[in-house]
Length: 184
Image: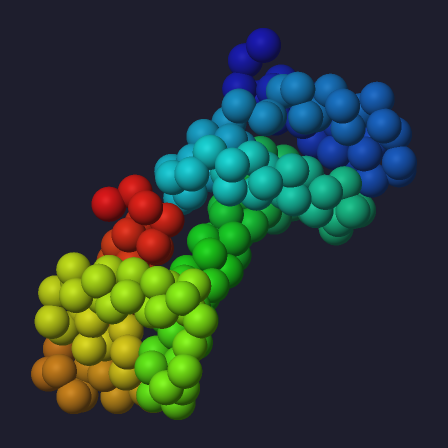
């Protein structure tokens, strides 16, 4: 098949999927899963998260196939956008869980004097992982997720562009997550 016939086959399968045709959806999945998984894996390093994002992407394709408009984009482009957005959402949620854990553990240090052995171990692990970040990264993570500073406020405080602050936060959260997961 050439590119044009591939595109028309996918558009046809997506149209049939919108009508509830499970066989068409199955064929659509078979033809596109490798491409979508590749897109997702470039965003999500962990294979288990990538597989979860792929599954959720196809759930969205199935439930939103009726919204596909061939006049706006090719079927593959439309599905790639769904997969990409799903991967980004999952990555943000994973980063937010790490940040929430950091904030919760930081709060423990500020409030409680009596903690269980497990809480103390978590807190020590978090402090160790935070210590492994660069000074700006550590301070930005704590100010953003513990004190509620916006990206713009951090940019002003650290005399950096907002885009740089976003990059530092993203990289710091990823490093913190890796450390907390025991991968570093």
